[in-house]
Image 1 (cartoon, rainbow, N blue to C red):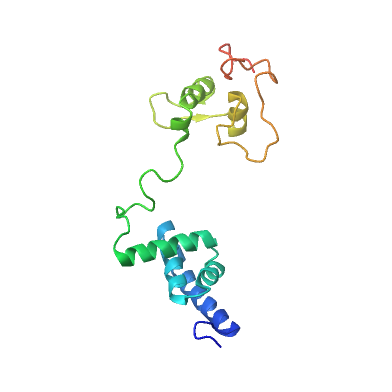
Image 2: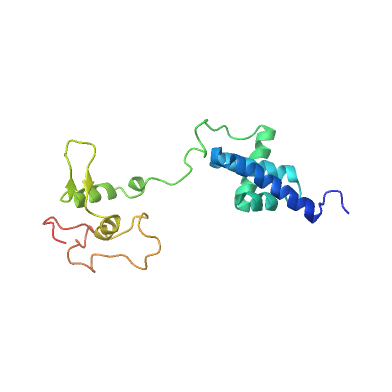
Length: 174
């Protein structure tokens, strides 16, 4: 037997131990903490550690691999320094929909104008329109609607939608 290979029972035992440690810490770990934990466990396991850590934690092998690389960078002292409250490098994550679609906020305000309830000077307002109705009225999902719908309502589907701007007409008819 090669010195770096483990028997099947040793690998299973290692996975169970990793899983037990992960379950104890899982609720207190951030996204980056989970990645570093899994990467560290994979590093400690050696050969086959990425697959073992992935099975034990439920994280993808790519995530474990990224965590392993981050652990190695930390050991070498070349890891990018992140602010304490950050999980990702600056610029990481999704962009706000209002940045990607600047016309979204004015369109929603225009749609909600007639159905908004509450004191107009209060910070708390509500509407009777659902997200589905708002998405249908804008004519596009802007990436925030139902992901499995087969097609969206467009201006040609409804005469109450303006063909040029995909907004409800000014007279308030639907």
